[in-house]
Length: 473
Image 1 (cartoon, rainbow, N blue to C red):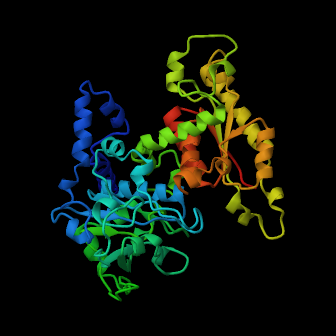
Image 2: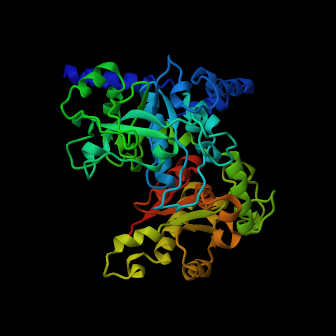
Image 3: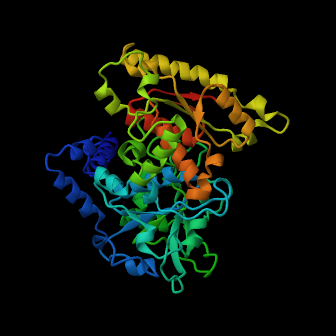
């Protein structure tokens, strides 16, 4: 009982040490002196406290001797990367380390080759996130030179640096090997991996998940020393320089942070998810992405810059006073994400994919449930009880399928016709879709799609909107 009490108190201390509450960002934004908010952002954004200067040829040269950091790598696509980077920030907060966020880098299995490498801050409001969680956050582009989009720096003298990292995948994954991603080559990091000890695993069940607090223990002297005394703690040889190195203490790094949790596997699916509640919900989209996305959405609904989306006349039978409601819900549509494309692989070899995928009528049933819930929540006289516009997003490429969406009377951003990738780059169609999903007054998604999962969270937390998931057959 004493041991359990100590663990409970330590957990409370860990959460309390975050020095903020889930409502702190609201409190910050409501301070009477707006200069205090600006000062707070400037202090957290001041890299001179955590770096020796602008990005250098070597990350090691740029780290402050009196600071400790933590980082990780990308994992299988835009939304998964976002989840990994939020998990990384949370890990940095509870371990009192400065997280260094990697960029979004094209992966052949999702975005495809040819996309540019983009900073997290191109798509998300990083100053606002820092202020909301009250913790410093760096990007790799601030630490070390690299071939980022728009880079004009001389990269000739950028150093290929050896570093030791922890591997969660080697002991808990499917192949007994650490994961090497595109980012290690891009950042010119030659990594030697040491497997984390068994007690870092979330539970004895067959899963790939690591415990956040198990990983935190490795970032402090006693836990680190104990882990490195284990006979399994054998560092691999790095692929290019052939060096075997223990995990770096100043810049801790892990090969996969997607499978990280406090209590349950796939914890992002739980409403108590610490990574989402304490970090993710505060990662708002950047003003640039918002402006670009809103221009596409306005074009879809054929409305001008200063008009409501969709036009109020399409929602209301007669004029009413609804200024406050519109301020809360400026975009009057229900958003849908239909995951198809790579989910066809789950249909089986002998099954027609259209027999496997659920028809649009199934999504429409959930849209009707969303409408009913909006009416129940806000009352029959509310504009939100009369929302009829539906905006669909999907990874489907088949024009005939999109024709059925149009026949349904639903709207969508036609990135092919708009040539979005040509104009803005390969990342933007997906991020514009993610933004459009988040602005719905309600949302219908596809179960087991992380893009749908995160979109649902955004609609729930940002818009107080109802959400539904369609079960993939």
